[in-house]
Length: 112
Length: 113
Image (cartoon, rainbow over all chains, first blue to last red; front, side, top):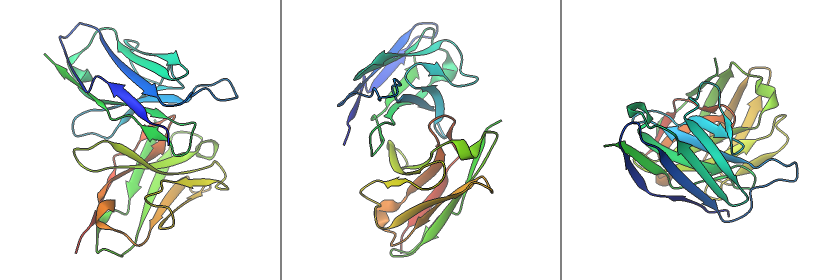
């Protein structure tokens, strides 16, 4: 099974400052169709997970442009250019190319 | 607006069965693979099962293989998770969704005597 490793486990950020979360896959997530099936979700406190980024770098509808996804192969990054208080929660990466699909362990983002 | 609404959770005894439903709206349901994931409160997300656009292909986590069955009805824009031989470690919040639209609000399944 594919292992998704997220770092750091937690992050405390001052509002207005940037934040970055790393996600590493144990295998290459590039598919033969040229797409890389890596997704990012945010689970705010007390809520269900919401989609932020699909296929590595495409923002889901309504997601602010301060969120960006990048990476290729086995190394991926979610960046928040200017953290806002509403961004608190646990961020998960997920690979959707291999069976079983698998999530990273999560990165908890808090506001200083 | 995309909506994914789960139903069917509840309390069941070990060895019992439940059928979860997920009603979808706001997108072309028949065009997407659909998934179930679960989460023990306070823990991370765990993938459970997925089904192809036409229902011809399904996959399961090893932990539920042989006990859970996923299905879909594209005419009703609904998909399902039939859960049999439930065990205490199946206790979790179950979310339905798509990798392209996110997840529903979740339904709690508690397996306990």
